[in-house]
Image (cartoon, rainbow, N blue to C red; front, side):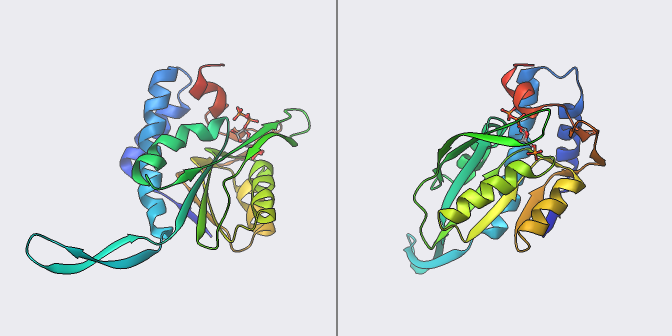
Length: 206
Ligand code: PRP
């Protein structure tokens, strides 16, 4: 299921990301703010466990997060969402998967994989700002399923309809959260209107 986060602050920040004159420092700051909004929205996927807490006046009911939260950024661009998510979910464990998209074939190649040990309570947030053809996300989900993952949520900033369709076809029960659903992919597999290459713009390696 696809959720598109609609919020005036996020729309303003998406515009900053799209603007080709935005410098890497302003790009990072906008991505941090969007990441915070996405992390707040992602909280709806978290279960709670109840507990008892002693206030200065009496004992009452309280809550703690009921999942073992895992953050899995897809390198490199996914790094841009880690700080916001780990600020709001400080109990999270963090893994990394490194995928590089071949710009001619659009196929992705895995160059790094370090996923924390998963438990039956694990809820994995896969962080990748760009969901283009969906190839990187599908490879990541396959890798997670091999490790026994049962609950996974995709978090993106900009998604293309083609990529959403591919992911939902391969993983019909998956939750996808994005802040913008763009028009389509162009002939080079880039999201349009898009923002260019998020990894390069975030890291200042354009
Ligand atoms: C980009 C982007 C996503 C992927 C999306 O990564 O950051 O990870 O491509 O494309 P897909 O949906 O068609 O798989 P890129 O290969 O440019 O690496 P980078 O993050 O290191 O820049």
